[in-house]
Length: 94
Length: 140
Image (cartoon, rainbow over all chains, first blue to last red; front, top):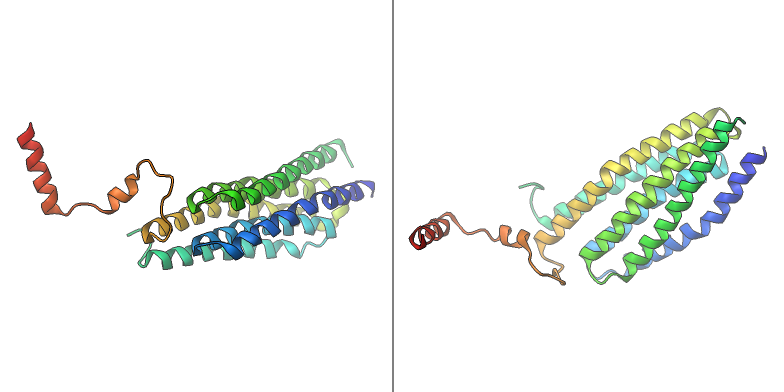
């Protein structure tokens, strides 16, 4: 069981870097001048949040967090497509 | 715990560490760049290096750690599937967003030398094309 505690200590050391990155992404998402900046910041932050959820699943030994990450990645892609379709004003690809 | 498990765990931890650093760099870049089209660059760093790489590393760690119990292959497979989804969908979403932003014109292309996409979007009509062609023929 010593290996698991080493992994948990490593993840605990890595965790503040991710939290700082999320705070910076949230700052850009809140003050972005255009709607594209906001969506881009939310987009990048949520993909990183999916990776963060998988790392937390290893830390807490909870496998139930894995499907949450898959669903989050798919929803953020749909957010991108919805917003770009709204910006373009017509069907994508025409 | 065999030697292969230790090697997998160390490689996975290195990947997770690189991913965290790339995530921080991308977050700083997305705050410091002055323009949407430049911020796109930092955001794609955060998508591939900051999300895809730590997911592969998490899959390695989950596959190498016996302490996760009987669900460790489920966790490794789920992490791999999430990494594959992000590898395919992240650049596609960024491209769609950049295309929609450029076509709607809500963000000016600021440090600009030449913009061929804008010239293509303001294509001349067929009549103008014929006139241009005739002029070209006369000059030759």
